[in-house]
Image (cartoon, rainbow, N blue to C red; front, side):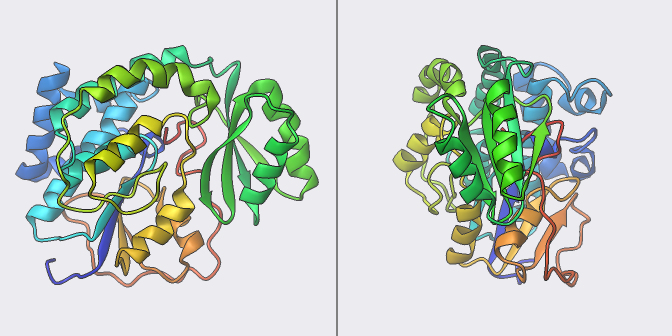
Length: 326
């Protein structure tokens, strides 16, 4: 594997959560140790919890699964010789990217992700507010136009995911009105049920309560550049990464720029950690010919020919419609 040059790694957010996502990695002792350390912090067997049918609708379970599995996979891959040129995570996946690169310690991030999940109760309930994906060519321009015409409420663009996808967040009535503007532009608006209105003004109470915990984090210079959601420039500057994490909940996820930044950092191939393609289709919206491989466990092949992707179909915001990468 060490002979594979120019590889970037991307880590999904909550939308990548699946029952048993970590199980294949548990076959590798390096990855299993990461899950065991996280379980010790959480005070429960996390892998067993994530297998329970009703666990993943719990935000804490879903967030911990994608973060811990992302770190475990990274440790497994790098132990086998992979030397990525950069790493990025979508939504809560950014926490995994920061641990993977060495900017933050696993234990403090497990505690922080658990606290963050609890604080999400301060955001408006999904029955009152949420998120919806604008899908189609020119999605970002249409999303910005709809927000500009909304009259200064809480409607905002939460994610710029790719040329054919952006995500709006706001109150339920605002999203209902936005639908007509999106449809009039010839695009589709797809509601993302159960998702809180993150990456916009409605998440400000959560961000304010999380600020004290963020201020107590101990940062290190990462061994690998991280591309943050709020400031998509590859960076190994702890101060810059800390500021980006502080802005994370109220600033949009700029994933389209992240996809470009990974290539600028030297990536000629992207590995996505997960159980199903979530971020890969978004990366290919920006770079249709860039090889993108899904890595589901330590036995996943890393050098198979990339399938043709001349006209990639829009993916939903780095997320499944039920759970998102917040």
